Amino acid sequence: MKQLRLVSVLLAAVISVVAEAQVPIMDDAFLKCSYEYKSVKDSVKHEQKEDLVLLLIGKSHSAFYSYYTFQTDSLRLSPDYQIKWRQAFLTAFQKDGAAATNFYFRRLTSYTYKDFLLNTIKTYDDVNNSLFVYEDTLDAQQWELMDSIKIVLGYNCQKAETVYHGRIWTAWFAADIPIDNGPWKLGGLPGLIMEAYDANNEHHFTMNGLQQVNHTPIIDKSKEGKYKRTTRIKFLKAKRDFEENSARIIQAQTDVSLDFDASSKTIHRDYLETDYK
Image (cartoon, rainbow, N blue to C red; front, side, top):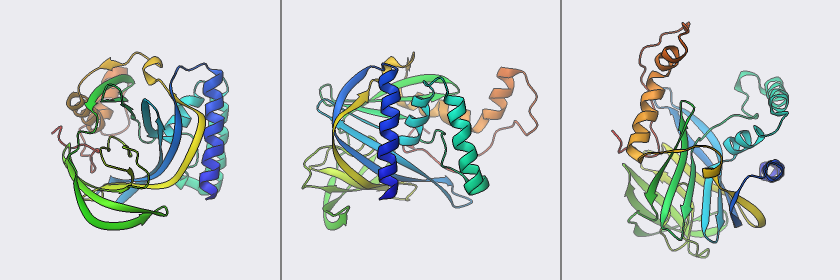
């Protein structure tokens, strides 16, 4: 509960920075959902990474992104960003040492926007300092409803399953909240998705906060930079190639000799979508 209050305070501070920078607004959200997002960092070492992701729902659009990534990207607009980053890092390091995570750094890098009027999903992301955007169809999942019921955040939730972009997904949705939406690209159910995970539990979203809001902006990412249009498959292939060959690519771009092996490396994890291979 303390974490949620802290998030609300920090989000308000970030929104203030955004407002001062006159960032264009796409819509005003009336509902803010927060989810704990756990994903596999290394399947061989059995390591996980955690994130706090937000779903802002408005009348015509919704936006889904990492709170920490949004915080970092937004505060970069501040003239004293480097000072704030250093202060936050030193405070976190003094408290938690090398395991420190409570400072500004990007986690889930993508921003996912659902357009209810055009029935599209746009994903904004970056690879090697280049900005990209690609489209999907809204509510493309074909769900099978199940009889199972569980309680999530105090709501009775019904189970549903689907196969989507390479993974088998299970979702638990609350029919008492008749809003067709959910974390990431998931949606198309007769209720808000409160929890969702894939069959291997490599990606797991669990709602930990639900709040009606006023004057909470959904920011128009398309105005923040020159995004190159691409396709989902091309982007994911490029991202995978960069991650596995990042040392070699950076070395070639900078013509600087690095003090570690620049050969390809195997990444022991995969993205939310796996059908790009």
